[in-house]
Image (cartoon, rainbow, N blue to C red; front, side):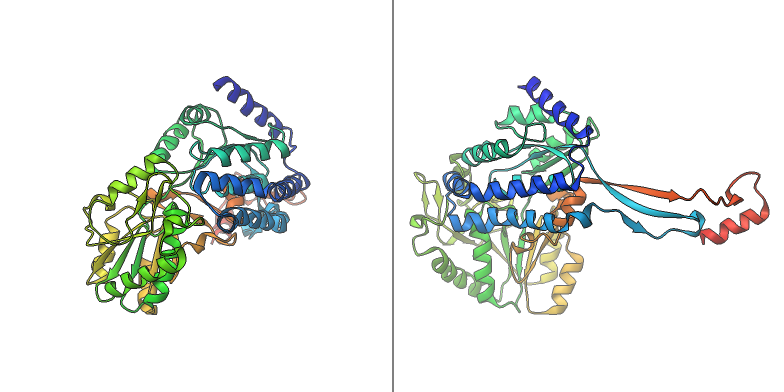
Length: 458
């Protein structure tokens, strides 16, 4: 397999060197072909997502297919502007010339994606890579096999392998790909695997984008609209059965409103998922038995205030709320990545923020509050990748804002303009006239030249 991958990557590098992927017409045609292919095979994509994760067609479009189509539309609309030269101010010392930055594709890139949103987190970065003019190898997760197969078939139908290729397999294939020479590695997944990717990339000084995760907190203060907070927290937490990298991992709630929040969460869970969520065909399932058992073990500490039922046959865990949870409990030691919501109370917001500051920087942060001073203070002092005020998750569902982590939750970002920039290098160019040549920079240096240089530089 390693030799085959070496040949594949070599063929992509050869195609890139011909300049075939550079014209905007080529990039636009590739994006339009991908858009049309997705529409043509949308039912197969939906069926695969249902088989892998139990997603309904509505959820698949809302959280995966629709977002990819939106990203393609953004790139097609803005491609000429994004790929054009960007003039910058020319200093007096550069007289007579013009200065500009010119985006250039990086070359051949590797995209490694996870299983929780397998279509979105594979194809959306591919869209950005193609818009920027690269060739690409995508490696979807083995934990979502049906969706991976559909993506492979889709890519093979649309693109020659020396332009875009999809490699299936597990850990060995990942290792073999990481041993190849790429111009960028774009990885979405766990922190543990992210460290392996970074270590491998360091050997070749290959730039890396890491989209990781972590324990994303949700703070509810005493001024919050608790009813609205419960509705939006329940939606964001239990979407895709909690298997979302930016899902609220836990709630930090002011003790004065914690009881009200728990009651409203119970009401919202029943309203959104039914009184028997395990029997709800639109609710979804845990991806596999390994993760199911891990989640069930995490529920053994603390007190289950609502939910708690598990069905091993269908790999289903109903939306569950836990109270009387401490910072040292097992459920607070790792990203939950499932439909379990611990609630920790606080008496002082400053103390709660201190607790957060002592922990790894999360990918997302959510704050429910009606107090503008509190909102401004928290947003300016807390460190996190991105987030929402009085909502959850929706900050990532736009091509107009960068999405990415910080610290242990990742490095680099994408979506829209930021995605184009991620897969590009910006060449800084000075285009100097030859019809005039100011002599003051040349030797022999004279006092008048020194004075003129100081004036120009300041």
